[in-house]
Amino acid sequence: MGNNRLQIGDIKIEPPVFLAPMAGVTDYSFRILCKEQGAGVVYSEFVSAHGIIRENRKTLNMIRFESSERPIGIQIFGDSPKVMAEAAHYVVEKFTPDILDINFGCPVPKVTRKGAGSAALRNLDLMEAIAAAVVAAIPGTPVTVKMRAGWDSNSIVVPEAGVRLEKAGVKAITLHPRTTRQTYRKRADWSLIKLLKEAVSIPVIGNGDIVHPQDALRMFVETGCDAVMIGRAALGNPWFFRDVIALLQGKPLPPPPSLEGKISTCQHHLELLIESHGEKTGVNLMRKHFGWYLKGFPGAAAIRKKLVTATNPDIIREELNFLKHVPQHEPPPVSRPA
Ligand SMILES: Cc1cc2nc3c(=O)[nH]c(=O)nc-3n(C[C@H](O)[C@H](O)[C@H](O)COP(=O)(O)O)c2cc1C
Image (tube, rainbow, N blue to C red; front, side):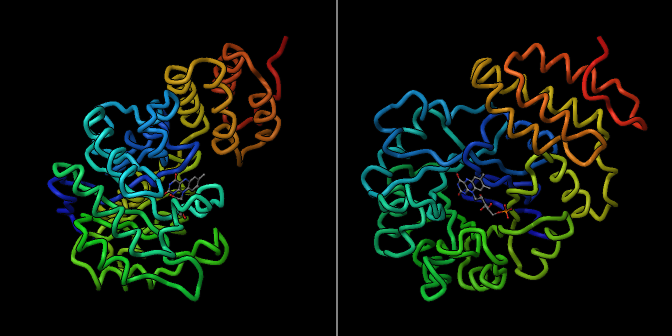
């Protein structure tokens, strides 16, 4: 199922299961964990083209990646062909990612008000001009696009936008088939992925509402897409990649991770975050991940509360170590004995 020989430009991709770009989530630490579970391609969070060309230190830090993450896509967003082209050139020169992705999907007003992200869905000439400028600026690197289906239900731009993007030289398109106005309401309309697939000859990556590993298989069958992209289902669950890949290979679903396995992953995630952001920010960033990882077992809420209120990484480390060694048939105690 899927295209086993998926290629984006010259980049060979296997398996056709991608980690979605997610702001505040898919930094280096989380991408590494998803890669370890088999993700075929990982993407950075969206990065501001203006921030890149101004060489903003925080912005450039978001682009950092390790060679073990390849193939990796760096996603940029912006409102002007010139700035987007300059930013793409800068990223490719300094960081040499495998793929440069353009964000035409972000529905957040702070971004769209400035004409960036999914604002381009209201102006296909601008969308095409941005794509063509970026393609021309980085001839040796495949350019991909991630987009929504249109600004609102009266202005669906699929498949026309796809045809224009292919003509502009884009090498693959990811479609999250909701409109900007819809944000995350109602279900993603997978029939639009099929429509896009039938209209273009470049690879189409389907995205949206893959909640169970079986949904990924269903998306391949129902839409004919070349790859699937997983977002929210991977939060606190990088094993989701392992599960989808097992099903794609015709194997049974692996058993779910044990509590001990989840805690080991939390420990690994925390150390990667501290390594890349320092102790204070690393601990802050880890809070939301604890909320996603540690649920669904007796005493989970109390443990999460304890971990998200701790500021000292050593206390968190001790707490995780202790929790790891509690026998699993017992509800873990809220605190360690004195
Ligand atoms: C926390 C969060 C941050 C996101 N940030 C981005 C982003 O930076 N760039 C982007 O193209 N999409 C972003 N998205 C959208 C996802 O990539 C994806 O298209 C969407 O969540 C639908 O896929 P899913 O149903 O598998 O989650 C974000 C989604 C979430 C939940």
